[in-house]
Amino acid sequence: MRNTRNFSSFRPVQSVLRAHDLLSAFGDSSESLRLSELVRRTGLNKTTAFRMLTTLVQCGLLAEVAGQGYQLRVQLKKRPRYRFGYALQSSEFAFSRAVADSLQRSAAAADIDLLLLDNRDSPRTAIKNADIFIREKIDLVIESQTDARVAGQISDKFRQAGIPIIAVEIPLPGAKYFGANNTQAGLMAGRHLARWAETHWNGAVDELLLLELPKAGQLPNARILGSLLGVLERFAGLSNRQIRVLKTNGHQEAAYEKVREHLRKTRARRVLVSAINDPCALGALSAFRETGRENHCAIAGQNASQEVHFELQNRGSGLIGSVGYFPERYGEGVIPIALDLLAGRSVPPATFVKHQMVTAANFHSFYPPEAATGKSSAQSFREIQI
Image (cartoon, rainbow, N blue to C red; front, side):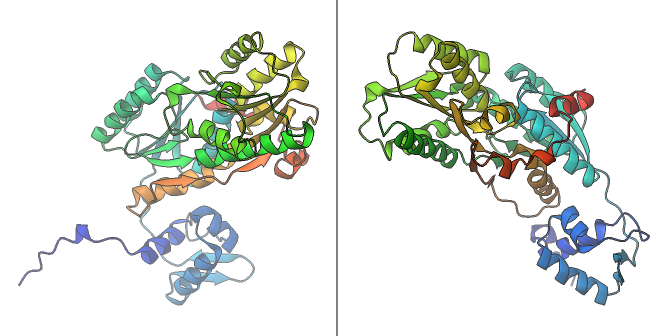
């Protein structure tokens, strides 16, 4: 009797898929690759990769070449080259440019074509860019746009076109998420502000100023809630009158105007400021600095991206720290997830980056001076923008 079982309902065998990844990492049978390079290309754990390589050698699919690593002993049918799209939030932001650079590097290493489009922090532009990706028949989209009002519309376009989505930093319905653990990042900022106030102001805080981004929706603004909770852990006596929330659009100039207007009305001399992102933190710093009140503030940002690196190295700055997201590493995490999605492998709904507080005291442990390339990410983005 003929077997009519539907094998499409079976889950793929992970060890076979990983073995295929190792074999596919080779360009051809003449290429020799060491274990470290194979780990980099596939994203596999080093121990797992070594065990699989040993098995593949025993099966005759690979050969171990003394001093050179491994070589193919079979010819594999190459998969079609993938085309990914990345719609970055805005090239105005150093964070977005760093993510673009990182994705570009990781995509190139995986032999993936990457089409970059700039959402320009505009919902209308984000919708147009979604249409471009669909028209270009992109295999997978990496999306970063801040306006929650159009998130469903953008997701629905990709769903109807059968294009999987990875949402970077700002969640989208139906998309896999990669980025901040917003509540934890906020807690980290709030606790850092509170400890700083205890050390430098003997615990005397007149006001807590929170700079939020309403249009981004509830989850990104969990950073602000987390900041509030982090401060209140140590300063539970702060009254509602001492806690002020300013609504921003996420840009430096607008945050500057909001904070400057607020400073005209307040006489608070010891003000803790927690900002939704680094541009808003810089806007607040400019307002305090311009009014001669920089020594009256302690500001924490979010992202620790390139635009605040100068201030983070300055121990006298009112910007006392920023929660690190390390966007220059995003490609190393996003591209393997994208490939797993397209291969039908199990992918968690959310992958969070590991946050660390970046300050003047530890800045060079994260960004050593010798790591500077001399080429800005802004220039790199302009070269590939279409």
